[in-house]
Length: 84
Image 1 (cartoon, rainbow, N blue to C red):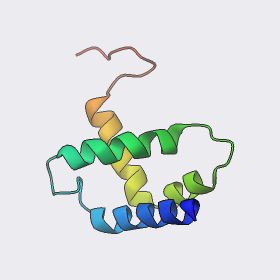
Image 2 (image 1 turned 60 degrees about the horizontal axis):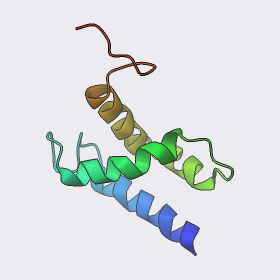
Image 3 (image 1 turned 45 degrees about the vertical axis):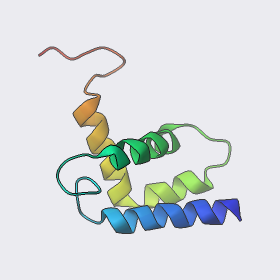
């Protein structure tokens, strides 16, 4: 049941985000920080059971959302800042 609820939650988030850059348009809000803090580890971590991760990876807009936030707000590679 927990897996089904989490899967449904991801699907609903994907539907709510749609093709927008952030949940409330072109600017991030506190909801974006909260959602990203839950999605990014799920997307990037190596998990023993990847069923939920696979579902997230099938929701391309949520994957793009995470990638966009990572490159926008965490623009370093390997823990080092890129030169300005």
